[in-house]
Image 1 (spheres, one colour):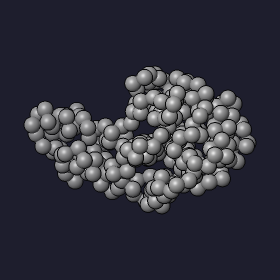
Image 2 (cartoon, one colour):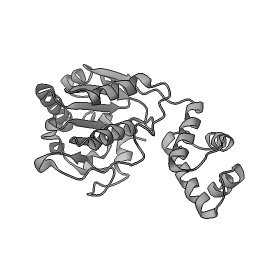
Image 3 (cartoon, rainbow, N blue to C red):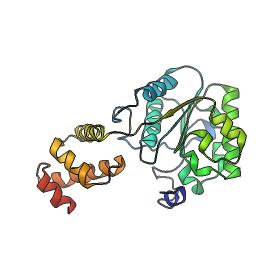
Image 4 (cartoon, rainbow, N blue to C red):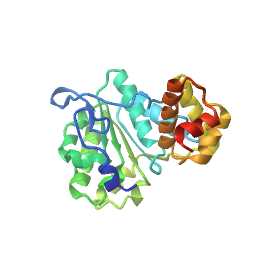
Length: 254
């Protein structure tokens, strides 16, 4: 799905979980809305222990830092940014989350003053490639953060910084300076364990045979799998039935 297609999915609103999310001092103060199920505890690490350690290290240190990580869409990068925001917000720190796939619902000036936050997360930076106003706004924010030196800056994209096709060479150079990681995709075995962990956190059991059946019959993107699990959880509660392959076929019309 392209950035333009994603941008049409939901409007910017004061109560949407896809809005610019801020928990900031003074005039920047807005409510912080994050998915309550996207935390570090609910993220299956797969082959990403180095990235998770780097994220935790950045959040625990007492000075500013910059980290960039990338993956294909649906690889879990937004989950990790939500988790970072949730952890720092729980500590009482001021955090900001900016989903650039929804940028048409706000303006680049939303970044003004973010250098005063403890944590800034910029998601889907590939979506502003070629947008001169947004590229300059992010470049200026990066420089302000670098100058003040107290903000943890996390940025995600769908490819390495040098491959973003940015129109501003200086921004591409800045993004390439810090720690850069690829968020490795999960294997099918990892996806099965991730689904079982998700089910456990939701208070129900996902039998192995049912999990493997879902992997064979559904789109294997994790958001699709998790959304289907939530749907099955509600259906099983309503029908007072355990998750079995026959029940899953009936509930999903497979």
